[in-house]
Image (cartoon, rainbow, N blue to C red):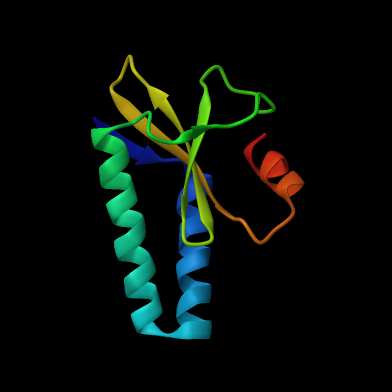
Length: 104
């Protein structure tokens, strides 16, 4: 299975990596990048390993999530196109209501 990132998810990931670099340095960014890459690879091999999220999202697909460090990778599985679509990289240290606002 392949994967793609929404424009929002790409921007969020860029923001996360930029912030991590500015606050914690290159080693922290490399560690986080490797962890996210590993999780995305795992999701392509086993797309249903993530937890089902509540039905509060306005999408025709079932939103699932996988937690890595303090980030939640929110994604959907598009079986027809054999693709995982990553919707967001959500910082779990924020209020959960922000996650709903960002996805919808």
